[in-house]
Amino acid sequence: MHAALFPPQPDNELSAVPAHPATTQKWIALGVGDTLPPHVMAYVIGACRRMRANLLLISLDAMRVRALLADYLPDLQGITCVTEELASASAAAVLQALNLHHSVLFAVSGAENDPLRPLLRARRNRRSPVPIVLVTPKPPTSNAVGRQKVAQN
Image (cartoon, rainbow, N blue to C red; front, side):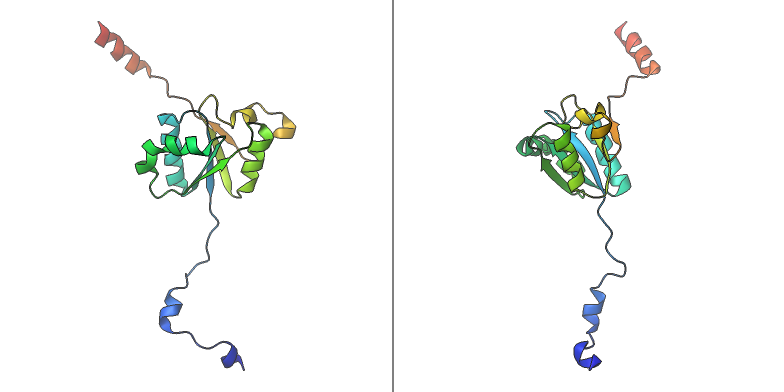
C-alpha cells in the first residue's frame, strides 16, 4: 500500500528538490519622497548587497518612485524591489506598510520629505517596529577643505 501511495521518483525529479529549505526574505525599507539622493542610494544598495536583502520602497506615489529609480537600475540589478504606496504621509500609514512585510531588518530615511520622517520624531505609541537609519551627506574632511582653499588661491 505504501508503494502505491508513494511511488519512487525518477532521479531527475529528485535533483530538482533543493537540498536546504527556502529561507525567509530579508528587507531593507527606504522612505522615498521627492528625490532619491545618490548618497542614500549608495548606502541602501550597499546594505542590500552585504545583507542579501531586498528593497522595500515606501512612498506616497509609486509612479514617482519608478521614475526616480531609473538612474539606479544598473546598480539595483539582482536586488528585488517592491514599492508600497501609502494612502497618507501619517506615521500610522508608514507603520502599517512596515508591518505588512515581515523580516524588515531596518528602514532608511535620507530626504527631508520622505514618509519615514514622522517616525523619527514619533511618540512612544507610534514607535517604529524596526530601527531607522538617517543617512546624511558626508561632510568634507579637513584635508579636502584645505585642498579646496589651496586650489582657490
